[in-house]
Structures are given as structure tokens and as C-alpha cells.
Amino acid sequence: DSGVTQTPKHLITATGQRVTLRCSPRSGDLSVYWYQQSLDQGLQFLIQYYNGEERAKGNILERFSAQQFPDLHSELNLSSLELGDSALYFCASSADLRTALSGTGELFFGEGSRLTVL
Amino acid sequence: GQQLNQSPQSMFIQEGEDVSMNCTSSSIFNTWLWYKQDPGEGPVLLIALYKAGELTSNGRLTAQFGITRKDSFLNISASIPSDVGIYFCAGLGSSNYKLTFGKGTLLTVNP
Image (cartoon, each protein chain N blue to C red):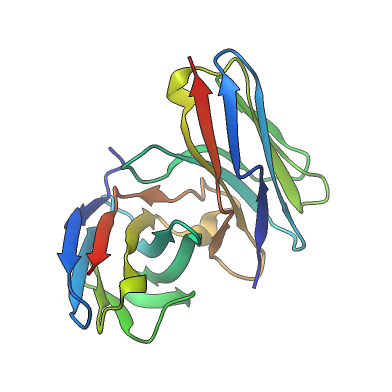
């Protein structure tokens, strides 16, 4: 158990719909990351938040948005869903990657939310 | 953006055999990490490397940070069935704080 909690574990929805994925980071971790994993693309970084503020952005579509709340949990909102959005969405947390060189620098991943768009 | 080339894509081996996989990049990384993902689970960190040339072991696993800082390898000795899974390398560059992941190596171990 990594200490990172993601809900829901599975979600089936239709094209055009909107879903929200939720993540609770490990206790004490300030950074939250969202990754998308599909069969052909591997793990793709979407976005990072640190202590409530957006820190870094990756290959995140404009139809997707995220936020980190004062209690440090995060939500990833996926809208106008398309078939190609079907994937595993992982949340990960760390204390702060800025300390990567002097600290552990590792990410702790949740078990993922499997989204199926029909 | 930064990209990691991980190879091989997949491996089928017999229990007891040794395994080697690697990642290369055209960019320099300051940190190399190796993760393993079991089916239905999120990736779990196996080994973290922070210095060029560093060789680190974790049980039957050994990983090295290439001296050029553009590559890393992971070795698994005396493989067992529970080694089955997808192994990912990940690199952290100096100019940002985003981990870049390789596409993974799918390992199958035949008992």
C-alpha cells in the first residue's frame, strides 16, 4: 500500500460525458502528479501540483483540467470524453521533487482509475 | 521534449535466468529511477540512482546510472515467477522536475 488513494477504481461512461477522478496523496506529501497510461503510449505525464499550485504541465489536453485543494487532495476533470481517452489514470505523490537530488525523489503511485469510454 | 528509449519491449525467460534491460536518452538526466508495475497496480519504486556511475542493488536487482548520464540499466538475477510485470525506467532532468518514463519492458517468467 503506497498510501496514495484514488477513486473510483473503475469508471465506464459514454463519449461526450464528463468525469472527475479523485486522489488523496500520502500523508505529508505536498506534490501530486497525474499520469495517463495507455497501451501504446506508456506512462504520460499530465500535470503536477505542489501545495495547491500548478507546478508543471505535460501532455494534458485542453478538455482536461485538474486542481489541488487546501487539504492537498487533487481532482482530475476529464470532459467531452472521446473513445481515445480510455486509459488508466494514475495519481502519484511526493514530498517535493525539488529535493530529488538530496532526498529520495521517488513518486508513490496510487492503484489507478481505469476509465472506459464507450 | 525529453524521451527515453527502453529496451527490450518484452522478454520471455525461464525461471532462474538473469535479465537485463536498459534505457537510453539523448538528454542528460540527474536522476534515474526504476519502477515495477504488477497487473492492476500502480508502479512501485525499485531503485533510485542519483550519481553518474552509481551502482545500486536491491536484493536480486542491480541498477546502474551510466557515466554519460544518458543511460541506465537494470539487471535481475535468478528470476522467479513473481518478477513478472512491467518494468519502467524514469529520468529526471536538470531543467525541470517532471519524471520522464520509458515505455516499459514486459517481463514474463516461465516456471
